Image 1 (cartoon, rainbow, N blue to C red):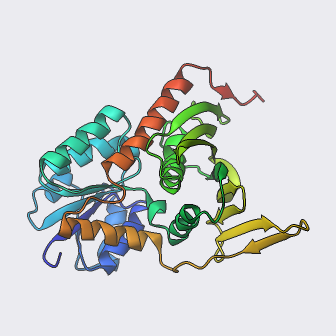
Image 2 (cartoon, rainbow, N blue to C red; image 1 turned 120 degrees about the horizontal axis):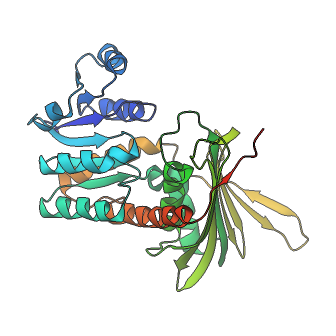
Length: 326
């Protein structure tokens, strides 16, 4: 992809990381955002990169072959659709869209036009996650019994309708990938509005994963009101329990097991120390060049949207619990 360039749309907290990675790989051609201060920062840090506040400028630029969308999730469908119609390959941050119908439409457009459509499910490129996947497939953990993902932080800039739309795509995509499950089922869901602003900021999601012909129960717990960030996956097996704590600087992945005498043993599997986002961006560029279907393709993104749309429908039919009046 020597002559082709990438444009990043949206340079907020996460978009800045995408700009950095594509710039380091020598393919950043343009950055688009409506905030002039953000664009000025890009001008200073990447003086050879063009900036614009008009998406149409990106679409009309023949040098730009791929568009990377890192805007609020309710804009993903329209921006991705316009980019595909303009003949651009598309990398869109999670979630792919906010409805199943829109996810299907984007997949159809990309397929018809022979374009790459990739979803930013970052954790599927995480070296520790892929190490854990290999351990599961090898039988190291034994028969899987339960899987749980806790993703919590303190978020004051809440733009999604629910914390689940913001955080759960990471959990659902990662758990489905680890268990090689193409058909996740929703068992139960709960949500609470603790701030009185009609946004669900604490939620849980009980799921069932089809794994090796059986069903593995799982749970996702998300929160926007936790002052201590928690990013932890626990996979319970009959032989060992794996804990992946992504908030740690090192030894993120640990395997726990009991000896016959009842002593707890902890092992730390080795995996490459590479930034997951670097690997994800590299994979996208490779797919653009070779035409191969991305690991996190529209099918992968569709499953997450399907689950979250069902969750949204369930929550809309029940009263959302609010914090007690003070």
